Length: 362
Image (cartoon, rainbow, N blue to C red; front, side, top):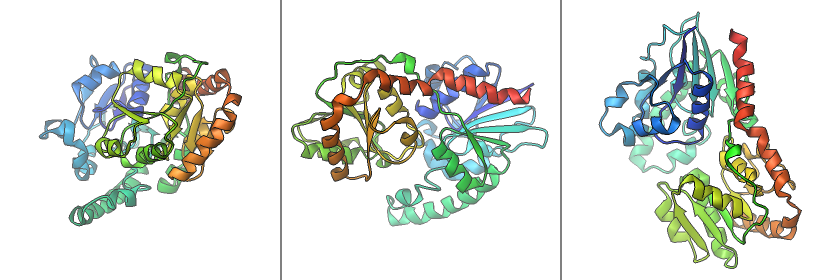
């Protein structure tokens, strides 16, 4: 039985790439396909010695940096990927690769991280961030992509969602049902620290929808509370200008540094409406409670008043109220109970449930 393993692109290593790495380790004889890849990223995923096929985008000018700007070409490009020799297609997708063509004898299983967010639920956030000329162009192309994305989704035989949050989005967008298998979190690489220090932490890529700027502005009003901010991205300079002396931006750091701060922080702050959210689970694996916006995948990974607290609005005031509430009850959060909750999202759980599902086809 020949199996093709697909992922949108392998350039930066984020949550979806970690899921794909686990799928590749489970199905060791699967042949890998992607739109474009970076050789160093293949090494980081441990798949540099496997056969990795890419598309014509690999030869485009500055493709490793500008691959996102070629989005309007991807419907045509992914439909040129010839997978006719495979019996089973397994795609890991948050964008375009799941739109490959298949024949009636093939089975396509898609582990869907989300329908294309900037074409669907984040469309207006994305469009309104552009100047008038690019707004018109993007509106036209994204309209065409939505039509193609819906049509191509109907070729998929089975959807797996990374959360009930995304399963609901798949049903609304594609009118397709999905089973839920939570993404693998490497909880075994984190240890519990019971002696917390007097600072808060937030981390993530500095892009608009993560709302890290709101977190920084909130702490700039809470002068007596320290915030550590880890991560880089296009909004880094903008966010740095908002920071007061009690807010420290570290930029990109290595894993050991991130883990050390997650272990010692009194709480992890999370403002994003995320598909699932790996970092809140990693923080819980350290026994660190979460203070999070009450929306998205975090509702499935955080237990209110046991492993964290929620706030209701993506605003400075709502976050400040939650922090003040947390400080009145922070002694009630038990680090080892928080850690126990994180273990539901381990790599072992992912492998077990993925294999249970995949065995149906043998």
